[in-house]
Image (tube, rainbow, N blue to C red; front, side):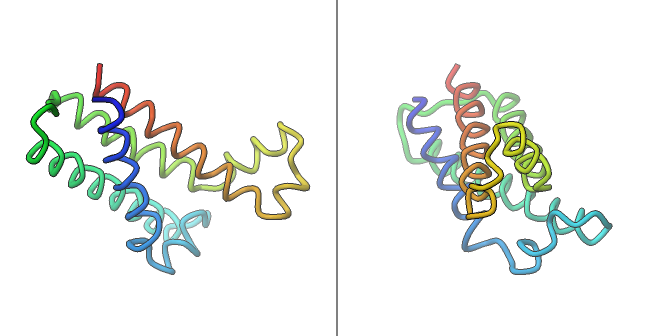
Amino acid sequence: MFPTLFILLYLGHLLADYPLQTDHQAAHKADQCATGWAANLTHAATHITTCAAALTLGALVLDDMTMSLPVAVAALLWVGATHAFIDRRWPVARWMKFARQQKWAQHGGAAHVDQTAHILALVLAALALAA
């Protein structure tokens, strides 16, 4: 069941990060002000909503997919919270400095590290759901 759960969460992630993320959210979600926090939290809420919709659809359509509601709620909150944290951008910048990847960061590497961190959070959520 883990692969199915991960694919559904990843689909929700892709939908929230690309077609459903507004230009305003993308431009301001890391800003250190009320507008930045509003953009960040609205974007994180979109992740929770799309992942919840994907998991619900999977539970309705697939015979072998069962989940505990409390675990599903916890996993969705984890997805939203980790997404909000990672998208503040400083965690990725700090990691890349620690890993001595400043040149790669200057040439677009931060986007890859960002997405890898999001996927790690999704894997952990899918593992919790499958357990």
